[in-house]
Amino acid sequence: MKNIFFTLFFFIFITAFSQQEDAWLFFKDKPNAATFMANPTSMLSQRAIDRRNNLLISVDEKDVPINENYISTIKNSSGITVLGKSKWLNAIHVKGEINVINTLLSSYNFIDHIEFANKFLNPNGKSKRKKVVSNHQNKWNKTSTDFNYGSANNQIKMLKGDYLHQQGLTGGNQIIAVIDGGFPNVNTLAAFQRIRDHNQILGGYNFADRNSNFYTRDGHGTQVLSTIAGYIENEFVGTAPDAKFYLFITEIVESETVLEETLWVEAAEKADSLGVNVINTSLGYTTYDNENHSHSYEDMDGKTTFISRGAEIAASRGMLLVNAVGNSGNDSWKYMGAPADAPSVIAVGAVNSIGNIASFSSYGPTFDGRIKPEILAQGANAVIINHVSGAISSSNGTSFSSPIMAGLIACLNQNSAFLLKSYPTKKTNTIQNFNYYLKKSVFESADRYSNPTVQHGYGIPNFEVALNNYTASLEDNILTNMKISPNPVKSSFNIQNLENSSGTYSLQIFNILGKKVFEKQTVSSENIDIATFKKGIYFLKIFNDASSRTIKILKE
Image 1 (cartoon, helix red, strand yellow):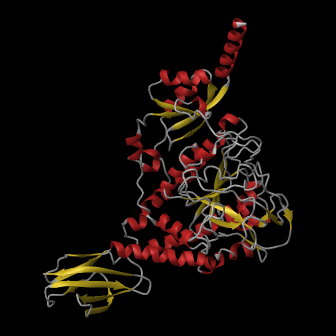
Image 2: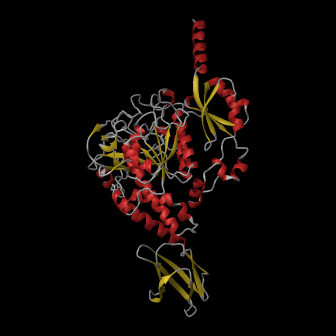
Image 3: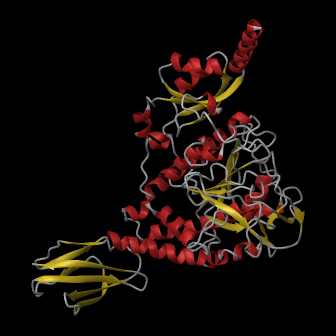
């Protein structure tokens, strides 16, 4: 009996360690980093560099490609297949037998550590994990399409997106990357004729098949794109009809594997290198065909999954990331998927045409207690373009609330370009925080901002309010950076950092008793003479209709 037990145990042990597994190999360094960083155009397009410069984001080692010798060495290792890579995480995605993958760590000193998709195989893996509910699906089974003859008015006006368009903010000068499952017929359907005629499709890539044919695979991406870019005169308009687009396929719809997380990160890296401003992702990951690779709710903390780690780096490069929160609200698994859990990602839930929450819209919060979704848009009976017939149709899913929102985020971000032109020499934290203020303004404009819920988040935003608050908050921050020099003052002082502000400002000075002792209607950075003032404390106020700042002055 002992021999039978031992034989059975040995067979199970050998079987377990001879099966094929997915893993990420993380490398220790990038030996050629200095060479690449001295020549940024070898890594990034000029447009990407310009975006970084505008936002005061430096090129760093994360931008440097993975050392090709490392990749070649692993590719040439017997029993190992390289499936993908990420320069941001300095890692490659491999497949092979468990024991063969583990041997690599001791064989090559340039490997820092290995992470298996099956967390139980990792040294610090979770020994006990809440079981992922097996009936949860990441595909678009909650998406049902039927024909109608409606228009996109409601889903745009619900968010006051029409106000942005009236201000000339229609997505011009913005590049949006749509990362999805396929874009068949975008090159032929009449609804995309306008963006084709205006050369608004800049390119794309099919990461799923490793080729340049992105007008293929699942039609979900075509329908997603239509809510941003579609146009049928007098019948249908997307939320950012004048934006430009890159179309990336990373979803392999016929299966659900952890490789898709790696492909998404590759696409985000490509988007960054091309100078993309906004990424829309109507995808989310929790459950895989291999149950051991599936994520638990504990993993929804914005820093555990490979894709969410990549998303955070994408945001740090200056891109705005918008992601569907998921369609699991009615399931036993009701939470968001990755990368919607990432802190810097704008996760979007779904409402119906009158603003009531869609029951299928996934819940938050993240495992570490953050609000998700942050905001909502129409996703129940959202108006789309059918990917086969080109007819105006309706469909359900946060897959559509996300791109509806992403288009308006791009329109609002277009205003950032206008503001940059208003003070092009401005080099302060204000510029670096453009994306922070943009998101903050959108969230604070939402109807439940003061009372968020686990399914509504902050609610439905109002982009008219968001635009006005965004501009004002940036201007207020500019005044925060304003200072006078010297202070204490003997006879005169200069106002610094005001010359780069937009608008006209007035100046008043008050004594310690609150009496106005000096006034100038139009002021910039000129010298202000207060030689005749008595010694003591004074208060200088700079203001216009939108904002103001008061600074204490000591007159010597």
